[in-house]
Image (cartoon, rainbow, N blue to C red; front, side):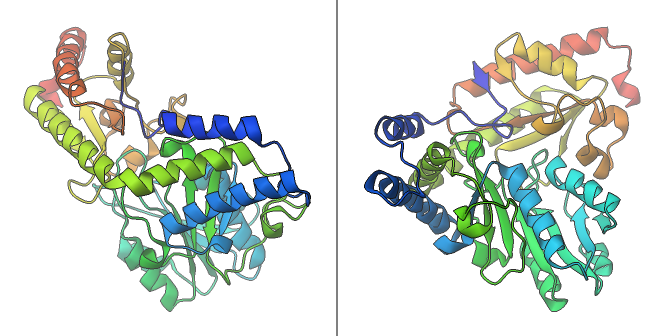
Amino acid sequence: MIYLDNNATTPLDPRVQIKMTEFLKENFGNPSSLYPIGRAVKEIVTEARDTIAKALGAKRTEIFFTGSGTESDNFAIRGVLDAMPEKNEFIISAIEHPAVIETANYLERKGAKVTFVPVDHTGIVDLDRLQEAISTKTALISLMHANNELGTIQPIQDVVKMAKEKGVLVHTDAVQSFGKIDVNVDKLGVDLLSVSAHKIYGPKGIGALYIRKGTNIMPLIYGGHQERLMRAGTENTIGIVGFGEAIRIVLEEGDKDKKHIAKLADMLKRGIEEKIPKVKFNGHEKDRIKGTLNFSFYGLEAEAILLSLATKDIFVSTGSACSEDSEEVSHVLSAIGLRPEMARSSIRISLGRFNKEEDIPVVLRELPEIVRKLREISALDINDS
């Protein structure tokens, strides 16, 4: 099997599995309990929180565990707008994750005003249009750090600078960038930042939200005192332990991973562009997560390519895993100006830690042949594309 859909989810690192298994064998206490077996679990949770804080350049008290990146996004956006009823406007880009877009749609129905800022053909947000959108009623700007379909990295620091001049908070969804590039909350200057464990070889069902000290935000879930009254409910201790271990590995081996993935991605990109005619690369050539490659294949349907590759045990995707079942054209690819037929011909390849150099020649042997055969039976003339 050659798994090339690491942006959807990453395999669980065996070291994370071992850590979680050992924890399950020895620890069952509730971290809110005052007696020894509860306090022991509390200490382990605190250790994991410290590790996440270290990775982000944050303080332990600024890290709040959630159930996913999606939950973290909801927490950030709804929490800020609920805390500032006098400011009922917020700004996002046209290529945000469904977690942000659907939250925006919900809040619009509740009376909020949402501005969707366009992006250029590489996926970079239009900073002039964003600045024009900021008003005295703007509570929050929410932009992905790196896009999940293109890998394009947004100029978050520039956005923060213009936001601070207007007293506007900034949230970034860093689910696709955390663990792949440097993500430091002070360098970025953001007020809120979302991350998720299963994108960095950790377990599913656990995420976190960074909330800068002093940020005005309402709780996500009411009930007990967990997460300092911001998200009630007994902690997902096994998920937290796995998340902490996944981040520990990133801190120790992240540079090695980056070099390895960048090398494979360069080999694959160069090979696809050399071996397959009429192919278009989507995204920014330089300012992107190196392991994310998005290509349009003139005259074809992406689903046919995906399914043909799957018969060879090579697994890619057509875009966001959160909208994979939808028949609609990718809103991300539409936003960067691709015609519907081009957007429907696009596949996303995302590499990860466990991909091997010997995987690349296999893909470069199978994919060109699949494209050639599909084009032979396609009703579309690629020369007219």
